[in-house]
Length: 445
Image (cartoon, rainbow, N blue to C red; front, side, top):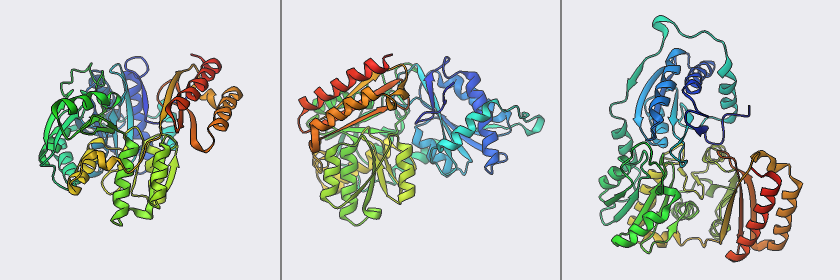
């Protein structure tokens, strides 16, 4: 069996890849590992998104934690960043979020946070995975753990979000797409507290409609509604609300690169950008790099995954980092990507300056970028294929300094992602499709 943990915890089809038995064992293993790291009777905050499978997985995970002597603080339906926030705010030893983020409803996942609110490093996840088969004795009698609810979890998190605003949003008319996920209550509430007029989409979760045709994977839905209503801007979250994409008043989509560039530039202008540094991933658009270079902002690049962005931010002392997909981390307020916090910061920056979000996003020119996802049987084989390496080299020679190629294995799905940027879209598409064809031939599903 390969490594269970991917770039964002354990993820798979609920009941097949992620079973109740695995969730139970994982809860017990987490307690054993936390015990080795100074938490002899650990307290774990457990939250979930709106998937139907979240019910049984929450019960199984909590039971496993208690069986090994840990206590559970049940947060109920929460966003992923809310669980990270609550873990630190309540002084817990760890947090666990049951979610498959932007994946379809049949999937689910489990990811863990440290007591500081950061996603666990690979080494600790490996230790937890090794402990799944540990025959250590269960807790017995009065030593078993207990389960308690967190009665004011949402209120605590909303206060945290509202406190991050740079200005009131009282003049803004917004469309918010909650993806029928865990943002469905808290995102509209936070923005309304700040004074915005909020029109909500996809806020009727039924356990089976999370991310279906809505949310950050379909930002055009919010964009079309912005145009129809004549709103100032739109926000689209994914199922666990750790990301946000935006739409301006004309219906153009604003991605994470543009949001990160705008926020970093604004911080730099007022002398509030630590180390004059921003952290991003290998998928960042060339236009982002150009925009930062023009302003004298240093860019550090990591592999894909907001956990790796967060790790590099901690190492370098950077105050902001993020991904094109909409994960943005503000080090002064969060330890992980937070879509609602990003919305509060980005929209309130526009309000403070008295400009539309389109003007903020205009700090960078986005190079045409084409991404092709290729289903494969062995996603890790991309690193060993000479045929794929040759195809990439051919494309890079053709593009020269006017483009870029990134080919990488997905950390959560059996896919290889081929990304090509070029000064003109047809060239980017032609090279991306040519490389994707080679990937399919070499590693076909």
